[in-house]
Image 1: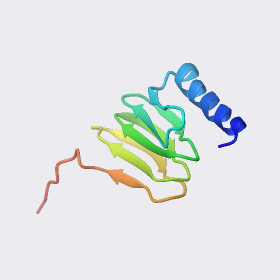
Image 2: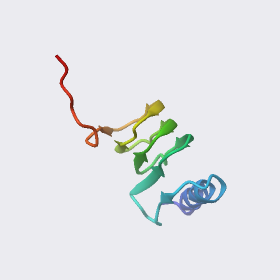
Image 3: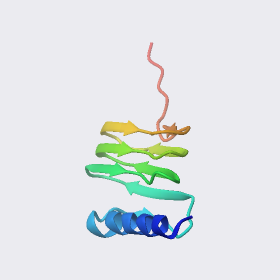
Image 4: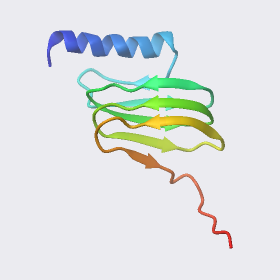
Amino acid sequence: MIENETSAIELNYQDYHSLLKLPVIETKNSRENMFFLFDGSYNVTGFQNVSNVFHVGNGTKIIQGGDYLDYFKISPEVVDGFFDGGDGYDTLDFSEYEVVHVG
C-alpha cells in the first residue's frame, strides 16, 4: 500500500471516530471495518478498499458500502432509510427476525 493511501485511511477513521462519534473498529492494515450504527439516525459511507460490516439498529440509516464484500446485519424493531452495498458481493442479514406465516 502506498504511504499516502495509508494516511488517508487513518484520517478517514479519525474523522468517523472523533468528529461523528461513530463506534468504528479499524486497525492498521485491516481488511475489514465494523460500524456499530445502533439507535439513532446515521448517514455513513464505508471505506472503499476493504470490506465493511454494518451492525444496524433502530432509526433512519443511509449507508453506502465500498468496493469489496459488505455485510449489513439488520436487527432493529423499526428502521428506514437506504442501503447501497456499492461494488462487490454484499449481504443483508435478517436472521434476527422471526418468520411469521400468515394465512
